[in-house]
Amino acid sequence: MFDTGQSEKLYQLADLYAIGITYFGREGFRRWMERPLFSLGNRVPLDLIDVSEGISLLKTEIMRMQHGVAI
Image (cartoon, rainbow, N blue to C red; front, side):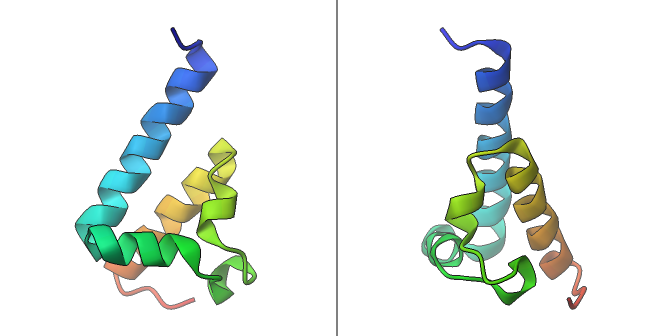
């Protein structure tokens, strides 16, 4: 059984992956998660999913791309 914090993080991760796969496709999202991004200070998205703030940042980044907002 997961505690509330773990459950919330799993929900956030599932949401991030659903958004990412919908936008990029499964393979495209995997590649996006593994490469450093200039808009994230050259950090690798996969390195940011350990904390809720990182997950939120990645979701925001994908939503910016979906809406054509340049960084």
